[in-house]
Amino acid sequence: MPLYPISRFCLAPVMRPQWTWFPWAQCQDSNPPDPDQDREKIWAELFDELDINKDGHIDILELRTGLAGRGLSKRSVERIVKAGDTNQDGVLDFEEFTQYLRVHEKELKLMFRNLDKNNDGQIDAAEIQHSLRTVGVEVSLKDASRILQRMDRDGTMTIDWNEWRDFFLFKPLTNMEDVARYWKRSMMLDIGEQLTVPDEFTEEEKKSGYVWRQLMAGGIAGCVSRTGTAPLDRLKVFRQVNGFIEFKGNVLNSFQYMIKEGGLRSLWRGNGINVLKIAPETAIKFTAYEQIKKMIRSRNESRSLRIHERFVAGSLAGATAQTAIYPMEVLKTRLTIGKTGQYSGIMDCAKQILHREGLAALYKGYVPNLLSIVPYAGIDLAVYETLKFAWLNRNQGLADPGVTVLVGCGAVSSTCGQLASYPLALIRTRMQAQASLKGADKPSMVALLQNIVTQEGVAGLYRGISPNLLKVIPAVTVSYVVYEYTRIMLGVDIEGRRGVGVKG
Image (cartoon, rainbow, N blue to C red):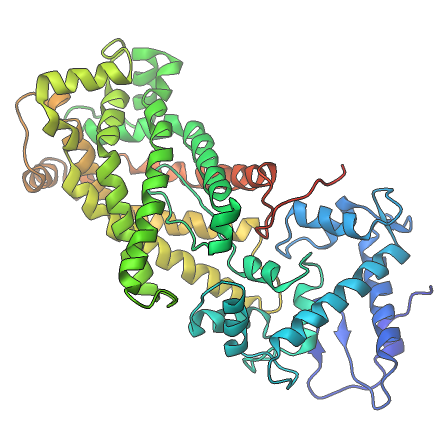
């Protein structure tokens, strides 16, 4: 089939040209050509653009390169090639490419008509809300409007067929359940501070086993992320506990001191229990979150929670999980700052604390730890949502943010949350370490705060924050990458469906 330049079928200018999701203009004519022929010409242009090496075929690498920045995962691109590759040679020729798009557009057309309940050729927020409810996903009208804004290129707060088709043309979705999961997709990033509250899951997802695979992927990502950044985490705790009066060295001196005292391996001291507490913390937080949501909904179990209600539920779930696993936090701090040979392991550390200080010592610093949950979770969530929707508003017509944007939003929001809650985290760590370093001197939270400000100044409340900020970007990046690959291994792809085997 010959390739037609745009000027061949954009014969007449219009006052408000409608731009497709691609960098080609969709023009109107007083005598418009046959729609099928027009689409064939556009597909030919698109195939030529994607066929980078001009060999008449498109492989996975070319497809990923040509569609970079569209929010497509490697898994999604592989599914496109697998669906269109009729002769099983691992690439798409022009006929296979156009046939895939032809079939996919028909599927998208059926979904559009199912959404368009009043048959006016437009989809509004209420229709999105209704359609998602029919597949078991409850969203508020405000959230449905936000979903709509992602696809609304002309600012009418409705979606026509062209906007719907262009947005989902390279999304391997086949039904409304796929679309619903795509819209509610979320990340479970863990940088070793506060675990995010799990996303809302449908009853179907809970029964199918999707939930535990999602949580397991997040847990594994957290283990790898925490282990990779453990030296920075130990450095942070070391500088938090050893105030300016006791240790006046800089970050490099602190590293050198720890290596000299216990060798390179000592940089991972305390990481074992830091990893072990991920599973119980995640399980307790998720269970508590579900129960608290039911209490908030009261008798109206189908009601969708508002933003402030989800924040309250998340904060209470976090407090519940922290209360249950807090002794492990104390053990982690003691092991982290312990000298070489001081403890033979986790159980030995627990026995020594109980024998010398009693059960109450396992809850030292509990109050400032609980107080830090609210500013951290609130600011982290608010900044993340603000940045993400700011990007979506500036890039209307594009797909979901790609990896770089999401990781960037996560890193910035986490940093802001830490800046707000760090003084409380520092006081918590000092209180956890009091018995081993301070002897009989055990000031209260308020007294400790006054001592720090008096002896070290306001800057003392942020002692150790440098390594904490340094670990944010690598921790978030590692967590995200491991999370996505683990989901694929567990059979849950980026859209939240059970994966199928993909060749290559």
